[in-house]
Length: 230
Image (cartoon, rainbow, N blue to C red; front, side):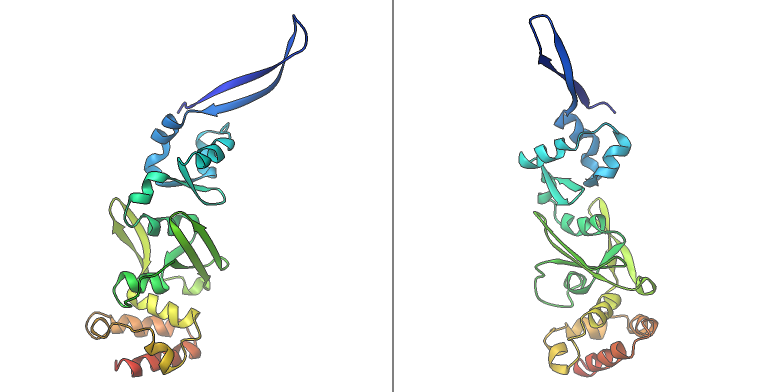
């Protein structure tokens, strides 16, 4: 993979003498794009593996030129992907690992809550974090490693995203957002009654709830069942 050229910078000393003071690498964006476009988004670690002499100043220059989008420190995407539906969800899995999309975003994806979600919400075994870029706002809530389950790969165009099952997304919400602890608060979620009655896998929901081993969660689950007559 060849897409760099070396530039030697010479300093004039006298009429007959020059000395080399710096060697840089300049990358051709077109060749770079051909090599990395199919990655969708990429990080500098991948770049240095494939091209150890890569000059990271290229990334700053291309971001300033509007050719790349900086997703977070060390992560980038080509600007053309802003036009691809669902790519913002794919990015969520890529820029913070391990993680899967859950909570409000997953519930909206399945049509369980009616509101449009203004940020992509996910859970991770890493510390709670948030990022903002041209694709949107990303929020990650920390969850114990033993509770990192209940998600699947969901095909989306030519890629896949890690997305919580609807039952796990609902339980993650009740567990990680403890203010949903009254009938009024849970009713304000405006969960879709038809989905809960006909599509929610109640056996999976109850099994997953037990795996949390949380009395506080079970209390909120029971309140939810009462409010929505499950």
